[in-house]
Length: 373
Ligand SMILES: *Cc1c(COP(=O)(O)O)cnc(C)c1O
Image (tube, rainbow, N blue to C red):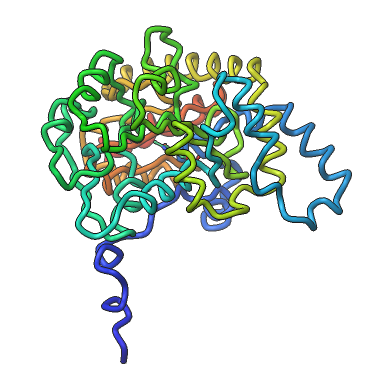
């Protein structure tokens, strides 16, 4: 028999598929549960922006359009993004989720013999995208679970082509300051691409926090990626964007699949991106939920990594997998992060107040049982 693993490129042979959160209906079917709360994928508990929903409904009133290919240039969405941030249309690259952009960046800049740097505990898609194109991932040890930007600068070699930064990072929730970012950038050679992944940027309320889009004029080698999946509640539709110089964006657009963002995603994203009220409501709900979880975990004697995202990485002070399994039986889906090298932590997305209470009560019961049993 042919061993097809050996036929795959070397980088792919070493990959494991990305593990998504368990779907709600699957768990409901498996365990016959009446109620399931999913706090596993950092989705918006409010669902999509109502403006996006209204635009989708309008689009469905004209179903013939769904038989046509989408606008491959994504002109109207790019215009809405350009208006919002005051950037040029040519600076924007649309993605089928911002995951797609990470893949596109890897395909444009990386190949055999090249190195890409990312942090320990950083988003799992960076090593996936890097290894899939045959390049070498250089994983730099974290400091206090966050990116050690000084160590990352020291890891740069003549082979380094790309540096991936997540701010805030998933699954840890950690962030770095604008000053530390500038200190890194001054040490990065001008030809090395820096990807600043701001998937959770909208959740950061601190006005002094680093805003990647404000740095683009200063650094020609910077690509900022954002998504409509998290704060805008469009995770299912898959739409994200990258902003960079027109030159870098032009390179990304050479490799981008011509119709990578579907029509409904374009329509929903165009409406959502202008819905500032919804983002504010989302942020307020997240801030309140974060406080609720911090108080609850403290009362349970658990510590959390500091987080600026819409999730918390909670130290279970024990092997987390049995707790994850017990929570499933209670109808609560959270995210184990053992694959990230965090076997004692669980990542818990912030839900509505009511979802949080349901999950907190379940967690309290589970921890009690673990002590009793
Ligand atoms: C969720 C997430 C993304 C991208 O999500 P998309 O749904 O593909 O837009 C990117 N980076 C980080 C760190 C994330 O957590």
